[in-house]
Image 1 (cartoon, rainbow, N blue to C red):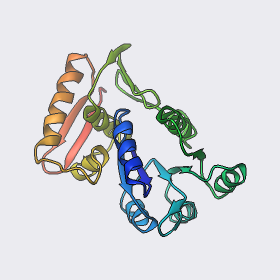
Image 2: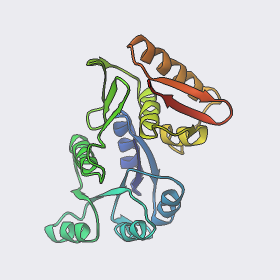
Image 3: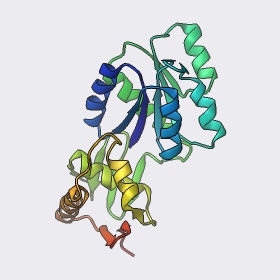
Length: 224
């Protein structure tokens, strides 16, 4: 999954980038509202993590802007403004959750999972294709009941393809969902990860196949 962090504390942003990556999360990070508006306009994020005290204003002002622009991203405010009054204010302004600083990373992960469980489409946490099932809340993948272990990149590729079942995913869209915008992508990195993912799926007995439309992108082929 891909999240946006709006946080001007660079040390905290770096720590969250490392911690969340261990949970299969791609994190784009910006330091102010202006950059956040550009990021939200360019990419579709599942959750936006927003600090309130930003150099160019209160981060909660972004919530109404996202709603008015039709963006479906969920939001969690992470802020040192942690009084009951401040939390109520943030939630009333449209945040899906409010986590006062300082916080433990495990609690943030739990709140991210809880917010995703409240997604508008029932059962959207479980993605199924053929004999493979992926639980986005636990990051567990099973093929015919047996657990399949993937690397973070492989998991992100598979999740993106599962979320777009029945559609071809453009290479650029796939890279956007697998890599943050401050990562340098080598020309053959995606292909290398795709090759390893295909091999692992085949070895696990998955009856889905990742097919390539040369020069365009990839799609999941499922059994009839």
